[in-house]
Amino acid sequence: MEAEDAQRSVEDASTALELASASLTLARRFAAGAVMWCVAPQWPAHGRHVAVEFVHPVVVGKRALPAVHLGGPDLRGALRLLSRPGDVLLAVSSADDHGTVDLLRRSEAWGLTRLWLGAGAPPASGLAEHVAWRQTPDAAYSGDIVLLYHLLWELTHVVFEHPGLVDAEPECTEQVCVTCADEGRVAEVRTVRADGTAEVVVGGVTETLDVSLVAPVLPGDLVLAHAGVAITTLSGTGP
Amino acid sequence: MTRDPTGFLYPFIESEERDAPALVHDLAASAQAKMADSRALRSATLERCEARVVQAGQAVAQRLGGGGRLLCFGNGGSATDAEGAVALFRNPPAGRPLPAMSLVDDTAVLTALANDVGFELAFSRQIIAYGHAEDVVVGFSTSGDSVNVLRALEEAARRGILTVGLCGYDGGAIAVSDAVEYCLVVHSDSVHRVQETQSALLMQLWTTVQRCMDEGISA
Image (tube, rainbow over all chains, first blue to last red):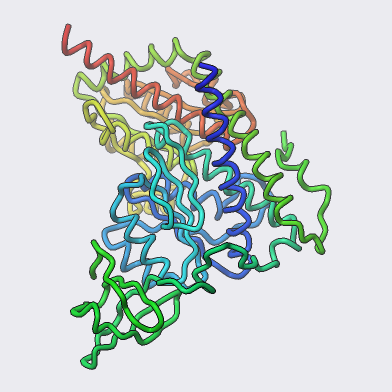
């Protein structure tokens, strides 16, 4: 029992830290005009709940923030049409929900900042800027997941009380930074041309990419772009 | 009752502030304390309500076993809690699926009722339309005072439907209503902690219903 408590305390501490830095990111994105798009294909109730928290705060006097739940059969198409570079995607899911994983990968190409809250076995790293997870199997029903987004909402509003920090753009201090370092970036193919190039979206910006190495590609495919060349197709993706 | 739980973080509001790591550290400490609060409230409430939840679970199992359905409703975050309850009963992660439906699902019905007869009757009119005596209704209201939730519980009681209420604070009007057979109250004045604990209570109710139905089948 004591070992269990100690383990839980370690998990709490790392989740709390993740939520704290996610809140700082989120407040900065909101301040810059972002919309937070909320998806939870397995548990739409969580997607709606987190959106209503931000739009209609329980604490009187807190500002309404633009959060929108997206559901329905074509989440990918809806998010592609509605989101703008700089917006935020908040996903609530288990790590093995393929639809959510696909949205997270594409969102990188679309230039969205990604927050991922979830339950069960934790996901592989690299699919979202911030990941806050509860590993208890019933977390989606026990109130644990609800607690995660309640805290995200509350901490985001605390950040707004520190305007000097909201306006500060985060500096690139990571050892590997996709903006500065020499590494591949996820790109979504929009139009394939006959000359072996394609118009793609990468980081929310439209670019032309040499796709001759990965041909044939179709609109909607995700490729890894490096120095103007698509070096590989990302598996399990397509229009 | 308007105590701001984050107030202690506010005194040093400075527009020139630049120490992000210090803020993140404070936020994380606050979040971790809230996690402990939430967990403590949930386990204390589950313990305090255990006997009531078991009784309610047995009664719900009896209704559902007799062909009844579970109808769930609430407003705002409580609407999503109702929706989550329906998902748990109808598409459970384990155990048997049970017939449950949400009265916040259909935007045509909700907006028609809100526009034509007022939001106070948004759920009670649906009880009149869909409810049968063998059914169960579960109303969620963190304040315990949501008028449309109370009206629906009263309408259900008049029709012999089993009524369950999930409330926060002191339980409000729902806790003292004769129309509510099982009222589970989360004693907290934080809407967030109430909602987290209501989820835990609902899951406990669902667990009891599943167990009762298993025992009913094997008996």
